[in-house]
Length: 467
Image 1 (cartoon, rainbow, N blue to C red):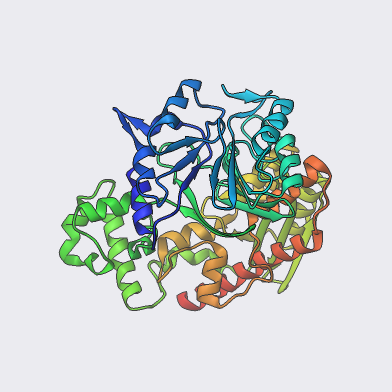
Image 2 (cartoon, rainbow, N blue to C red; image 1 turned 30 degrees about the vertical axis):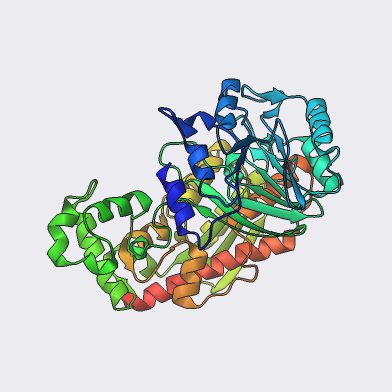
């Protein structure tokens, strides 16, 4: 909870008000303390506008009745040219305690907007509009948004719709004739980052930034490997407040940090030195020995959001010095059989991909086993996740080590579609599976090719360092 106040303190100026789109409202009341009320005091208007989520108890409504807190589901809120509307819960047929039929949702939104049609609407709805940032996985891959909410925003074009409910789309936004929709859901597992957005209004036009409440979001210590908000708090508590404090004199202090070891400290000391010297350094060249293989193939896969259907594989052969792809949007088995034939034609090469979580390898093996393609599983045994080695053994001034950021920084690689990422690609393919909505396949193919060639740019750069 304290990270919320720290977040507000980091902003250049106070916000007018705070919007909260529901779920786990009970956590905002602690021993007689109403955190919403305290947050409201930090705003210009002294207001938090909120709704309950589907997992909330109805008795949590009392928390939204405290000083400075406004339950939008019960009553709209007027501010200047805007009317803020609210919808609690989710649609019937799904999990939860607060659920409504589509007919009830439609009537509720009509009733709320009635008499305020001269105002610009802003909707705070726990449930997303159907088809917008709403593909859930927990109970099967499907749309979990409300058709009635979608029809309302299509008809009234709110300046902004804030929603939650669908966690994997948290921190994402979509714009269209329906206005701007922001899903600001956070994952609910312990230690998950809290997501938030800052929105500025100009009539129906909005400008927004989306980020997380993780303490020290801009801290230079985040450049160190395996350091996040929690570890930064440990650093600060121990008097380690800046990169220059990562030095030999503080070795014992660093060793005493929770979860710290000689391996961590040695890595941080060497990494901090490389950052201070503004150099790129390989800690142990032996960890990258697989890149010196004469026969290397680079690989990148694309899947649906459930990561249970591979439909595109991009490949680059150092032996042939050429890129190729295998594209089968409707026949995964044929795609995997083509990959097996390709790897055999390359002489069973070392396969290198970039994930930092061994995703490509695990996903390919799983899908090959599903189709009874044991030969492919065996071929993938000779594969390497370059992201894992980069995270632990490539040191430099990197705040992020995902492939697009790293390739841009160390190899000046420029993506053709920098606004896209793997999640967006997965979303568009999932919409094709669920709704038959055809994406721009050529654009998705180009994105995959970019990932493979960005990986090549990083590999070439590391090869030049370890020679």
